[in-house]
Each structure stands twice: as C-alpha cells, then as structure tokens.
Image 1: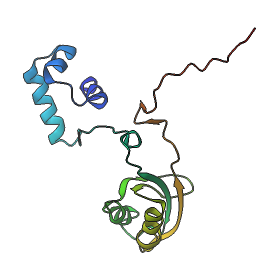
Image 2: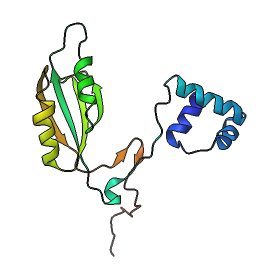
Image 3: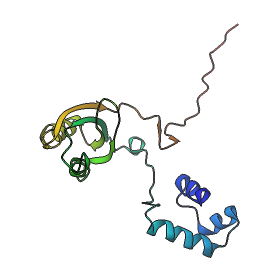
Length: 159
C-alpha cells in the first residue's frame, strides 16, 4: 500500500473515510492496513511540522559531522546508540564519505550546543573528531517550503 503511505506522509491527519474514498477501499480495510503498518514498524510515528521561528521559539539547530573508531564486532552501532539517546539529538545517520555519523541536534543557544559537543559528544570513547555546522535559515524541510510568502520577484521596469 505504497499510495496509502505516501498520503499519510504528506498529511497524517487525514481521516480514514477520506483515505478510503481516495484509495477506493472500505474504511475497515484502511484501518486494518494502518494497524498492520504500525505493528510492523513501517509507520513509526505521526507528527506535525512546526515553524518554530514563526511561533517565536528561537531553537538553534546544528549538524555535527562525527568521525569514529569502530568497535570490534559492533562497528559503529553502539556509539551511535549512545549518541541518539541524548535528548538534544534529533537525528543520527551512518554516512559514507569523509565522516562516519551525521548528528542533528537542537538547543536553545549556540553556547548550549557547543557545551553539548564539548562535554558529551566529544568525550564518548571512539569519537575521534567532530565538525559543527549551525543552521542559519531553513527554506524547506521534509518537502515543505517554510517561508511561502508569495512575493513578486520580477524586476521593476520603469519607462
């Protein structure tokens, strides 16, 4: 039911009645399919994408590149698990290329994030190097354009 997943990914608040109509199935079939997808951990969570800046909450987001020394028999997994258990950590990816993990964290200030990197992240056994990048302005997140104030971007022409 790829089509069901794609619809839910765009709008998880859509009713089962609307889904049934769109997919030409009964509400019962849709409810059972959603329950199965949740049980099988295909659907992991439901959420809203919030523009916190517009709300007035100035969260700071940082992307941290992390180099690791892999551990015998578990590779990067146990270190990644230690990192993703911190509340500040929003996302962790194993990467190819010049660094091993990509860690996305949120904090209330640059100082809070730098303190996290210096005292918690960098001190984990196996972490050999970190590089921090601070997000300056979001334009698009999870497929959604955040600042969609339509502006006339045409050049002004005067006679």
